Amino acid sequence: MNKIVEELRKTGVFYVATVDEDNQPRVRPFSSLTEIDGNLYICTNNTKDVYKQIQKNNKIEICGMGKDGTWIRVNGKAVRDDNDEARKAMLEDPTGPKSLYTVGDGLFEVLRVEDVKATKYSMTAEPVVIEP
Image 1 (cartoon, rainbow, N blue to C red):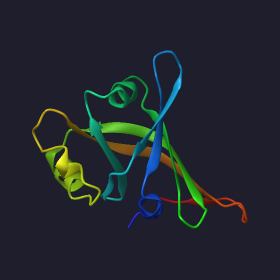
Image 2 (tube, rainbow, N blue to C red):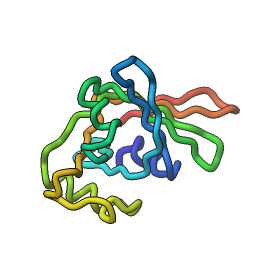
Image 3 (cartoon, rainbow, N blue to C red):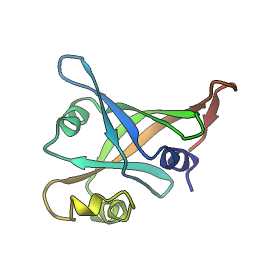
């Protein structure tokens, strides 16, 4: 499994940061993610501001903190994947996107995170770069 996906799963809830049209940072909690062909995927609803912001500026940052006090920071570009197989894979995430979305509902969007740079941090150790 992709080590970055594994680390984000440990956080339970992670936060995705985007930038709105006024260049104002926006951060919101996410919990659903999956790995497809070694790539990190997240999902959202295409009527939400987060989706609209990503369509205008696809640079995102993800951050989550583990129960052990370590945290991970992931930078990348969120790219819409209009593939129903990717949507089906995302629906299998145990955090419950299938209670909100279905394939073909016109709302459900999956986003592949590309150009990923990830680092794991701790108060007691040097940062560690995590390779995808």
